[in-house]
Image 1 (cartoon, rainbow, N blue to C red):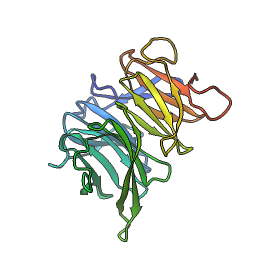
Image 2: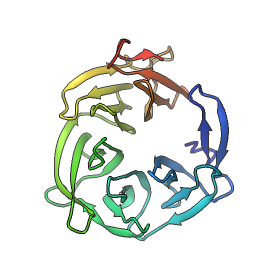
Image 3: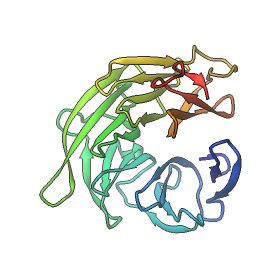
Image 4: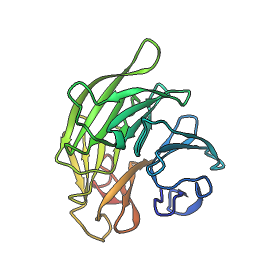
Length: 252
């Protein structure tokens, strides 16, 4: 997502720009991107308070979802039920968007989480556990859902995973662990689903390979690799995380 240009860039896995879309569809400030199982691309437009859904092959705008409850969306993920969980930063709410692309209900805050300010989101491989950053408490929490009688997601519990982190990017990995970008320490944390540390990638602000200056978005790609948006260095870096024959954080 190129926020300055108001476009979505298509990149090959070797970093080549192969196309872009969104410039002629009213997209202003793309904050996050989510892929749905049907292949469509959902873009959270922070400035326009909208979810923009694009066709995967052509980049054509399919629909634009808006609601008074949705203000300044920061992130969205698709759950196993086919519903979209959306962070409405302006209203400090998590919203569930139904399979018919209409607002279903408010998930959080509540049950002691009234002061939560949800930020970036990532969904675990089970499709029913979502990791999110609480920007008020500087904490990563896990929200667990279950499938209710109507086949819709219902929140079951919220538990802390990691505290003392300022993050603009979370990625849940296929092995169940979680990557969390830390804009304050300028590193990427690797933790288990229960919060146990696995590794730290980077060593504070820097411009060398494997160093970051304000890391934000994260995206896992095949081969135990993750793409890190190294914002102030104006680059994307591809790292291989711990898991096979490379050292944790090695430049891939």
